Length: 551
Image (tube, rainbow, N blue to C red; front, side):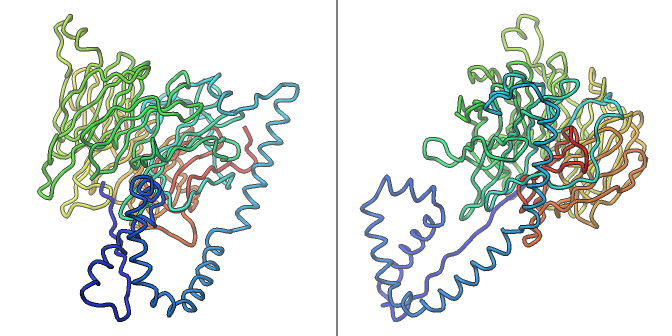
């Protein structure tokens, strides 16, 4: 996917001499750029205080007359903007609804935990009783019962909405729950990543939230004074609850890292640098984290530099264990019980690859190659991999998250997990870019045409198709919980569908009503008990609760 914006700052001078105008313009542009980027401003002030002071003085002299002439108009404009900001960011009805819902949760929690003592820190409590988390962005199990919670009649519980922050990834939820599933409860916490708009681009935000209230327990936006790179990758939490692993970078970014943070404090433990970006979400298998480092393509569509590779790192100490070349592995991998890694090869690759995760020494001792199999398919595979028993499920196509190809094609493909043999392929009119969910011998595919399509796991037959929001693409992954399917359209609607027939049960708008966004609602929802946690483009990270349904 491709992000980018250009903002020009053009000061207007009155009666400025032609000889000094270029100098003043250059100084004004430089000062304006860092002024709108607070983190950059702080960093530069520490390095060159005198030079910046001189440049600022030149700008003040050159703009003095203009500022004086425009003072009254500027004051009126500022007042109007303040009024608009109050209208946009202070929806007191929504605030009241969220406070009421939070109070209901607290009352229910108190009633069910009478006689017990709650620990002081939600983070410590959650980490003391960790649960396993799925290897990729969606639940990989096809055997979960249809009676598991599948919330409907969703109402707002809380919203975490830092200014100018887009939540593109899937949150990781840690807490107590039946069958050791990662559900929201008390105590518990949520780890989420965001992209914060900055002049000319994006920076990154990693946050840990209290699952009951959405209150930040810790936030990380910079390391050693340098802003984090933006996040498309979703965070993964280790099974013992101690570490959070996540990749950095958007599609045009270079020199990004795979990062590991302490889950209790947000302190960085290690960073493994790549010359590329890591939009892939990590798969965690014991002490191993595996992720794809994707290529940066030039205007000709070919990689400008390293074409990409699959990266394996030991979580406990950050040691890089191996790199396996794979063309453009933007896909989020899955790992089976034998430690075999399955990942998609995207543009200039168009394949699904199975990779042994043992060390180089172990493979040499057994005279084994790292690649178990590699199967070429008709289209690039940039989407997350799903495991359904002995079957590997992947989606792909020749479009990306921002642009639809002029001759768009898409597919879902099933492969034999042991041999890589193609079992069936189902074609679509555009790409399948998000994760494919599985349940009750059915698959649920998000299609860029705007549909969710249900397929038979056995042979790929289309069982039903449902349009979510007109022609708005469905770019994030589908999630199946119980008898229902959850999917998000890129214009900001969370849909709940009946998994048996595709009937639309309800839709919830996620973006800020006053700021509808530009089609960058790409997150996969996380269904956790009777709640749904999902990111949006302008509405922040939202937690929705089933009406009357307190766990």
